[in-house]
Image 1: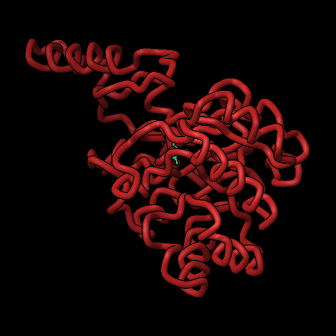
Image 2: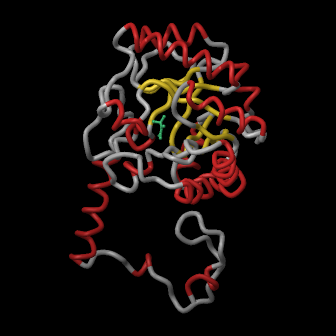
Image 3: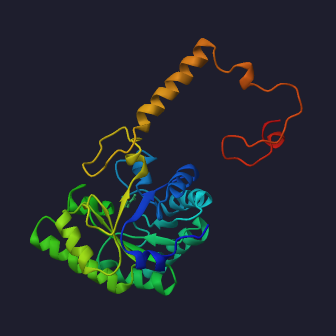
Length: 285
Ligand code: KIV
């Protein structure tokens, strides 16, 4: 299967789909389902580590999750998020961190948050042949500076700032731009201004593409669901019912049956645990 490339994405500009994945299983799911891009987002700090924000996610954690995701991808382009403070210190440090995400995590591009201030870092990354996706609007790594997870671009001054930053990032060479939690008319203006694709999350229908956190769209999030999320399934409920069924079956002694057990006949090599390719003898005996 042919992999999605950056020139292809930039050319198509419209109807692009990006979804988060932090592991092999989810990467396979979203890749098979047709996502164009997989984002190994620093949202993993909140979604899989249960933290209040993304600020303590490290480069090593991003690399760990990128490795797992890259094993599950066949077609989609993988973008690794640069965590807080991994691209704020110097261009050299930024290249080292992004290089690690690319080389060890086996991803195709990196994403970083912020406007004009980031341009020296973006220039350095592009000089090192590392493709960069930008991210404006609500930038979760700035929550202390902006006063929390709040919709951005509501007044003239901040609208102008976002438009100017979008143009500056495009000029610097980012291949796409995430717009998070801004009014839909501003997202439309920015999308019309730019030649590169915009990818919206909480930014309305006029962006070139859309991104959601996969756990949110699957209904796997037990906490607050933001207004911009549509739950296309409620796997949280289904999963809870399934796990309750397992607990009950073990307690009442109806699981496992002999049909679900091995006999003394010679073992055949079969995959274990859904995805493992290891022969049974090597893994169980
Ligand atoms: O970390 C993340 O998942 C993101 C998306 C919400 C765009 O940055």
